[in-house]
Image (cartoon, rainbow, N blue to C red):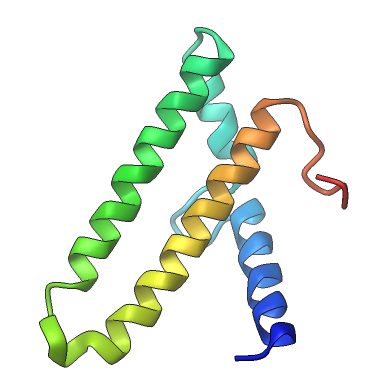
Length: 106
């Protein structure tokens, strides 16, 4: 995979992380959910990070259930889901910190 292909994948993932995909919230809505629980910002961010870690771990576990036979399909699916969830988490944390997610500097 060349650099331009990876940049394209990351751009698509970032767009999906901001806007959400079917059945999943975007980063702005995710940040709003965690901020609605009250408490200080650090506790809200910690809760978000912990839940995203659980999601990523569950994704890795579920994609490995098929074993070696499903590896050619499961590995790319797991990598894609983890990239999505991590980008969503990063964007939500930035939003919680008051940053504009559409600003190139962010």
